[in-house]
Image 1 (cartoon, helix red, strand yellow):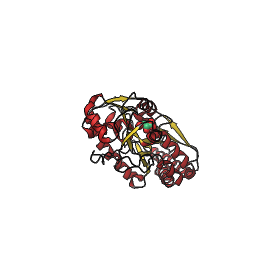
Image 2: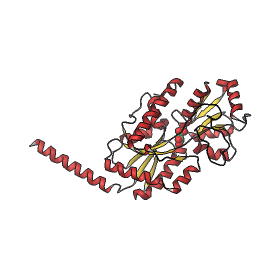
Image 3: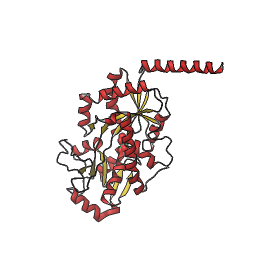
Image 4: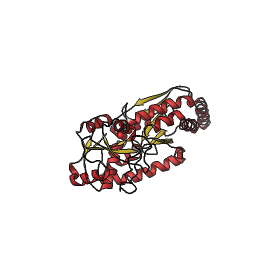
Length: 325
Ligand code: MLT
């Protein structure tokens, strides 16, 4: 008798989950951004939220849950009800947090459903306005001569600028003095003010400062130059002698583990529609971002990519020995 009841209750639960999936979404969807408002990740999430409204037929809200290199917001989504109404927009930190944080309160990728890659965002090596170096070759000589005295700003452990800076030092086979800030805004303010020497920052955040001639630019971190007017003559680091140097700060969309497949399908279809939206593409390209449309937009392809990024970055992080509890 007991098992008949249990069987019946199971059918009712399944039926109500199917009904909920069929109606999805019937209320606003929240995109959690694990970084502060006004920063590059926030900008990307807000543009995405705007573009998702139409295909989802619902309001899409951005919730900034900043702190601890993106791990606070990620944990919030990993623990959220897996119904498709709470999603995470995260960057490369999704793949690097397991190596950087000894006590990570979630598992990557196991605690998430992969909805797909949104974009790739190259970074740029930028310097304070008073630096005398006028080319990457000059800068390299200056770094070699000053080594540990060179201050390298970053937006906090686990930030994109921190990771890019680690890769940059590893490629140059040198150590600089890291200067961590509580976000991209104060790091950029001090670079412009000359309190720190260098930063390897996402193009999203750096392009307006380069256009305003507030910082000097020395190289692009991806393998291709950026077609932006202010950067088209700036060589890639690989072209300047750092063989195969390739750092792209990608962003992806994630749901908590256990979100019903029918809901995931609707969300993935909506994401695919937004990534063809000319308005979104235009906004992203203006900041040096590339909207991606490959197998990383499918769950299996994206999972494989995140796993590969985990392996690639854990080597660099171990070599640098920079961890947090
Ligand atoms: C942000 O939006 O604050 C950034 O994406 C942080 C970072 O540099 O990783």
